[in-house]
Amino acid sequence: MASPKLTTDEIAVLVRGALESAAFDAYRPLANTNVHWDSPDDSAVGCRHRDEVLERYRRGRAKGVRSHVRETIAHGDHVLNGMSVSGAPSSTPSDATVDRWQVLTADNDRVTDIRGFDTREGAVARLK
Image 1 (cartoon, rainbow, N blue to C red):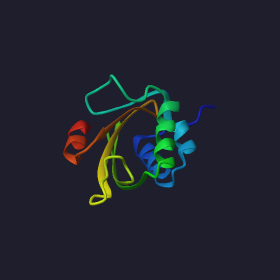
Image 2 (cartoon, rainbow, N blue to C red):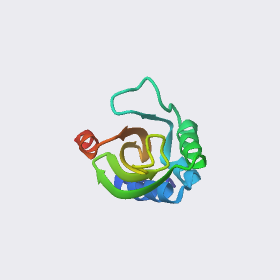
Image 3 (cartoon, rainbow, N blue to C red):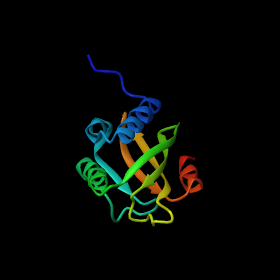
Image 4 (cartoon, rainbow, N blue to C red):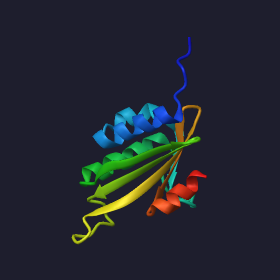
């Protein structure tokens, strides 16, 4: 018997937990094999499959990047994660923590697309 599909709300909770704990192997079954991770309106660069996404998280962690998920909203087939990120290359000593947002798109109970935003307004607009 097939297991029931995850709802967007359930995906949101599981992704948040994986990001918060840096348990990126827990993220693996939530991501579609061909998940893409790009900037909001660019599909030319970025990650093209699950292993690249997981490696990007691991590489950032190894370089000292830490994130705290402050906000998670499930909306339709999207999940918005608002994060405080420290140790990011865009951080400066006077601004050691930066706010970042991700909008994840889910299809068939897997994350298929991840877009990173510098502003909450841009991320929220993507939910509509």
